[in-house]
Length: 124
Image (cartoon, rainbow, N blue to C red):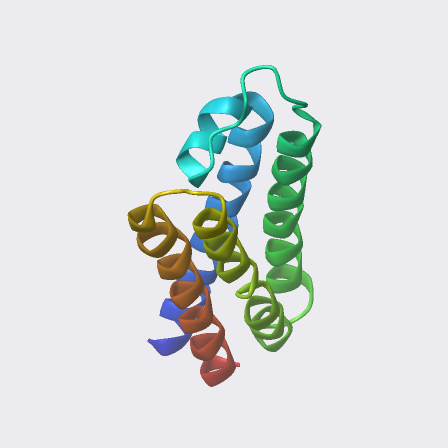
């Protein structure tokens, strides 16, 4: 049962980060507002595209590790990538974003990803 939970959570998180990446590519300004730091109306959208492609590829890499390597490899990936939402939280806080988004979205995401890593280590 632990294996099923570990794999399911990992797949859901990988798919979710792919969704976030795709959303940043398709609706960058709305996505930036949801991230916690709204983009300037006439600012350079290249940075939003970079975030979108980064997140999309994190999800693809996570699914590839799970499908073609092992749960242990995915666990290490989740452990390392779990640091990203912590940096996102700091970015939101440093740029005047709402604390509710910083902690309720980014910190909660980091905790969930780290739980996923722990479950994958236990299962694999």
